[in-house]
Image (cartoon, rainbow, N blue to C red; front, side, top):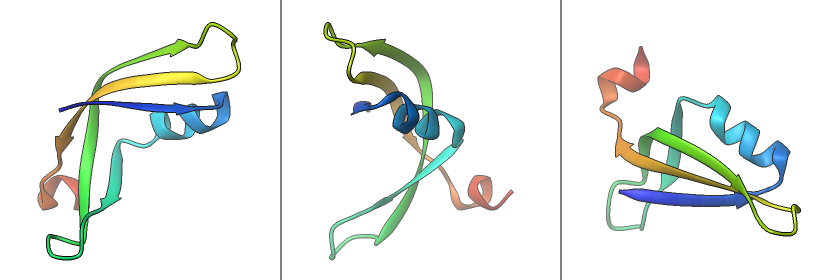
Length: 67
């Protein structure tokens, strides 16, 4: 799945530095899921105040997260 994050330089840098992201799911499904970001690209908006990070999001398996 392709996702986009918008934020300041500091916020986008923090996302890029983490190999695995944890996301909270809806109540009736698995509560926390781990994802890896692949094929990351970062661009700026025309006004230069925010950055856009686009990446492929893939679910990380438990064995990969604990290593």
